[in-house]
Image (cartoon, rainbow, N blue to C red):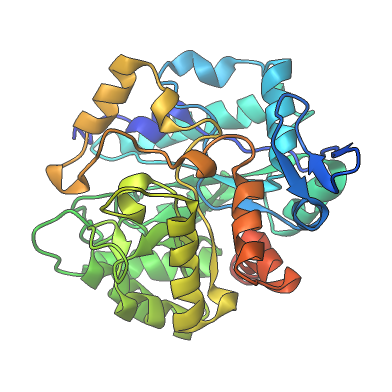
Length: 381
């Protein structure tokens, strides 16, 4: 993949939904519709849980639309309705930018999406600190966390503080392949964090920027956890004990993350969730169960790694280009989405599955966003 230009997320950006919504009761059924355009109904407990929770998607773009004019667009009424129906309080708008032009491209990304939030300020608000997420919930808006899925734009460790002051709150150390900091998950050999990588992690700790290792290689992930005295995040990944895929994390890494107080977000990308069919939302919940049993309920959350509508609804040429942009080890199948974990109501569907499995209200709230809210509050300055 050509890392001299913005990767797919830089082209698409991202946005999640405001938390304000109205539930429509279905007479004599005890079930509720949460979106006027959908016939799907949910039990009152499920609806109440989503409405009362801070729902944080640690990787959740809006549209897999590669056109750069997307950033300048005003949202349609239908999009606004979908955002508000989803129940998402905050989302991590993160892109992958690498190569020699990364510094300039990231400046463009931050400026463009800050302007987009301003154009649509009836729906969105930018995040500077964790209290902004709480404020967004009260105001019925979606809090936008700006992040990067590669750290090539840091020319030196001193750039970390500069980008923090420009609004960046999360940085993934590497994308899928080697950079000056460390190794990616699809590299044949993982040499771990470089000396420069250690400097960058320390600079991120000092600035208050969250360290993310979702796409990093196994050794690089373990090194980052060990080097950072501050808890870090795996914002969007899955468990290798369940699915042997390069984008998943080993039990060793998950245990190390939990021991340092970090949080892991579970994704719904089909090939990351399971290598076999059928792949359903139950398989997504299996990964949440695994992290909960391994390191406790306080260390697992959500990072969907998908837009509000799903990869499989992309234009055919863009869909083909997306799949072609990754190594064969990604093992894409015909579909990328998981049906019940795609679309504006996916958080309700996941909540329903967790309730079905016997999760308490407190545990559901922790998974939906409480754990990441705690981590962000402890990390950002």
